[in-house]
Image (cartoon, rainbow, N blue to C red):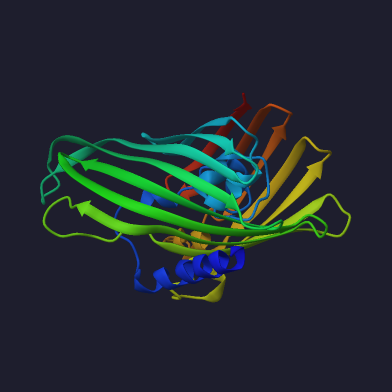
Length: 316
C-alpha cells in the first residue's frame, strides 16, 4: 500500500507541473526563509537538518524537525523593504509531522508619479502568506509532504488573493549521508485579481541533492530549479553550495546562484564592461544547540542592496 501511495504521489508531483508557466505576481514566495539554505545558494531543498525553516523550502523535510520547534526569521531586502517569517512544527505519532507558517513582505513607501515623472504622492505595497503543512514518513528512507498556502497582496489600494500548494518528496540514506529531494512549489493561482486580469503565481519544479564528501566535514549541495521552464543556459537552472561542519553544533556555508548572477549583471557604459557586483555569491554560518538555533546568511537579491537574513529557533 505504501508503494502505491508513493507512486501516485510522485506521479502527481511531476504531472501537475506541465500546465504551469512563468509567474508575474507573488514573487516574494521565491525568496528563501532558511538562512542555511540561503547561504548555500537560496533554493536548496535537500538539507536533512533539524531546521523548522525548511517548511518553506520542502514540506517533506519537517519530518526531520524536533517536536514543538518554533522559528522566527527576518531579512533585509533593499532600502525600505523588509521581509519576515515564522513557523511552528509538531510531531504527530511516530511517522507524521504537521506545521504552520507565515511570511510577510513590506515594500515600504514608494513614489507615485505621472507619466511625466511628476510626483503626486506615495503608496505602499505588502504581501502576506499563511499556510499549513503535513509530512509523513512513507518508508524508512522516504518521506512526503504537502503545504497549503493562502496569499494576500495589496498594492496602492489594489488587492489580490491567491492559493498555492507545495508538494515535496525526500529520500535520505543515513549510511551514505545522501539526501535527494523533488519539490513542486506554488501550484495554484489567484482567486481574486488586482483588476480584471488573473495572473500566474511563481510555480517552480525543483530537484535537489546533498551529499557528505567521504568522511570529511564537508557536504556538497545542489539544486536544479525551474525545470518546467527550460529557458536560457543550463547553468541558470543550477545552484551549488558547500558546508563545513565544525563538530555537531557549528557550520560555515557558501554558495553560488548562477541565475541570480546572470539576471543582476549590469553594463557599465563608461568602461564598456559588465558586472554583477557579487550577485550570485552567498555565505553564512550557524550554531545549533540542543534547543536553541541561530543561523545567519548574506546574499544579494536586488541590485540596489545586499541582504542579511537572521533565523532564531527554539525547541519547546
